[in-house]
Structure formats: C-alpha cells, structure tokens
Amino acid sequence: MKANSVILPPDQIPRQWYNILADIKMNPPLGPDGKPLSPEALAPVFPMNLIEQEVSSQRWIDIPEPVLDVLSIWRPSPLTRAVRLEKLLDTPARIYFKYEGCSPPGSHKPNTAVPQAYYNKVFGIKNLTTETGAGQWGSALSFACSQFGLNCKVYMVRISFDQKPYRKAMMETWGGKCIASPSTETQAGRDALARDPNTPGSLGIAISEAVEAAVGDTSGKTRYSLGSVLNHVMLHQTIIGLEAKKQMAMIDEYPDIIIGCAGGGSNFAGLAFPFVLDKINGKKIEIMPVEPMACPTLTRAPFVYDHGDTARYTPLMPMYSLGHAFVPAPIHAGGLRYHGMAPTVSQLVNEGLLEAKSVSQTEAFEAGIMWARTEGVIPAPETTSALAQVVREAKRAKEEGQAKVIVFTFSGHGLLDLTGYEKFLAGQLTNYALSDDEMAKSMAVFKDFPKPQQVKSR
Ligand SMILES: Cc1ncc(COP(=O)(O)O)c(C=O)c1O
Image (cartoon, rainbow, N blue to C red; front, side, top):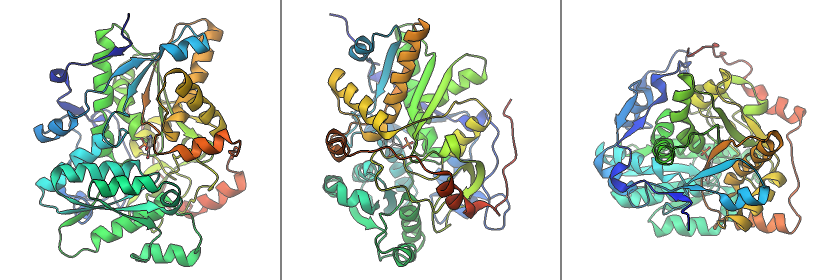
C-alpha cells in the first residue's frame, strides 16, 4: 500500500517564520491625520512585541520555544495527496493539500492565536478581546488563551452566534467568554443597533466592539487580538507554507499552482508567501486567492485606503475594500465575509504576482460535497471556495493534458458548520452576486480618503 500523506518528522518543524515585508514594498498605514502611522500609536491596542513584528522587515523571525511547544500538539500538519478526488475527476493533475483541520479548534487559526497569546502574556497582558465571524477564530483564541492563562472575550457576529451555538460552547469550554455582536456593551455596538435593531452584524462592527473594549479598559492589562489581515498574522501562518516546502522536497515535487480561500487572507498567505518568494526570484507558479462572489473584495473592489472596522477605530490600511460599512447578504453561508483584505495580499494582487478568483456559493458547496464523498473530511464552508478552484484547475489540467501539481490549504473541517450543508442539501442555497449598485453604495465611504501609490517590489 502506498502512503498518500507526507509526514514531516517533528524535529524538522520550521523554527523561523518568513516575513514577506523583507521582499516587497508597501504603502504605509495612515493615522487619523492622514500621515504614516507611528508604531507607538498602536500601543493601546497591541503589545509592543507584536507591534515590532507588525512593522519588522527582518526576513526570518525566530519562533519562540514555548510557542513551538504548543504548536507541536498538532504540527507539523500532514501534506496529503487527494488521490480519490483525482480519480473522480479523471485528471492528470496531482492534487496535494495541507490539512489544517487537525488543530484542536479545527482550523489554521491557532497558528497565530498561540503566538499572539504568548507575546501578550510575555508583555504582562491579562485579558484579550477579539471578534469572530463563524466562530473559528474565537475558538482558536480561547484555546490559545487557555494554554497561557489569559482571559478571552469574543464578540461574535450575531447571525453566526444564532446559527452556531456550539462554537460558543467550545469557546466557553476553553474558558473564553462569547457575546453576540452588535452588543449593548460598547458604543460601536449601540450605534449599530440604533442604525438597524435587526442587523445580522458584520465583522467590521464586531472588530469595532472588540477594539473599543480593549482600549477602554483603563487597567492597561487588556489588548485586542486580530485573527487575520495584519502583517504579524500572515507571518505566523507562514509555518504552513514552510512545512509544505519541506514536505514537497521530500517527495521531489514542486507546485505549479497554489490555491487558498481568502477572507482576510491568512490561510492563503500562510501557504503562499514562502512560494511567492520563489516567484519573485523567477519561479513560474500560478498563485490564487479565492473569494466568494457574494463578497468580491479582490476581484471587483478597488485598491484603496480604508478602515479595517465599521466605527473607523483602526488606521487606514492600503487594501482592496468593499467599504468599511459593508454588511454581507445574510443568505451567504460560505464565510469569507470581511470587507477588506490583508494589505500584503492586496499589494501582491495589485502588482500582478497573484491571480484572484471568485466562486459562487453553490459551486463551492458542490465541491465541498464532492470532497466529503471522496476524501472523507467535511470541509469548513470557507475551505469549499478553495476546493471549487481546485476542481476548476484539475479540469483545466485534463483539458490541456498537463500533469499540473496543485497545492492548496485545507483551512479547516466543517463539523461545527453543518447548517450550510443542511441548507445546500435541502436546495435552499441560492447564488448571490453583489450588484454594481450595492457595491457603489458600500464603497462611497472611502471616496475622500487618500489613495495608495502604485508601488512595485521589483
Ligand atoms: C476554516 C477557515 N478558513 C478560512 C477562513 C478565512 O480567513 P483567512 O482568509 O484569514 O484565512 C476562516 C475564517 O474565519 C476559517 O475559519
């Protein structure tokens, strides 16, 4: 019998993260005065050791031993060849995936939750606040806080809070506290409720609430933690791609195509960035972040300066954005609903180093079901967007008669996200593409903001 998984020996786990800021040029984040933000301005929100990582241009950054110790609960994660899917699709492509569903909360999110909890702990912080959409990030941070003895408070987007009660139970099992957002606890929450008492909530609103709760605690012992978008989050996730590179080398393979679903960009960046470095240095690889048509940030929105949250507490960041007040359609079940995108991923798309794709939610769920019925694991709804693109590429390889090597991040399992599958199987999921009118309305918010410069890294 031939093994389909490549297991990296535990002693070969990467001991440094790859920082893409060493290899690309970026527009700076801007403060309220429209000038480049000083790192000190972020001090009420994040601990200084993480701010230093956020702005660092050092290419390799050591992973602290206590972080590696916790990561070793599930890492290195397997790189597995999806032979059953290949067979079903009758494709000459070889499809490999990094399985991130084997972490305790079931996704890639703890790859950054663990170091973030650690750096906060070392800095003397006692409480973390955060937001969560579907609940994966809130669970990951609750888990990480339990490892380092921190308190964790999670503002969970209302619609998911109602649809996914077990995520709250999971967070509480790890000692976290989870409340629905918008809440009446913060000004940002009260304002959102005054605008629309029946709002399903959004990540933008929940981020505002979590930032306000952190900054408003006068003890100085509370900070905010974000599960995607920021440079240090992308940095921590690169352990995925660095492991994958070693695993590909063990079987003498190298990817032609890299794929990851993109909400804020972190699981995609985690796999892709170490290979982007190769692409910058001349390798030929197609690298594709994939998003839903219901939230088409990279594929239809412009590259602008915008806030990361609805109440405009965050700095202006250079990114593709649908507008900080964007509230996604409640019929969309596939996650990946954030209005913006990681500035690093945005910069690479803007430079043409990445080719962003979008998929409809029925195409995504069809691919998810195809996966479950071949490879077995039920994917998280977010992951199904990546899968849809994998299926497209496997079919293209067949049409072109080329044995392409496809590698993608399987960002999480969907065992706590079965509502989407239930609706899909009952024929209740319809496709939804944002209309030009809706887009224009939601993007009016940044029309007077400064514009990012076109910068080229090479
Ligand atoms: C399983 C899973 N995949 C992907 C994402 C998208 O986030 P990101 O683009 O930061 O990886 C999420 C976000 O919550 C998630 O839970």
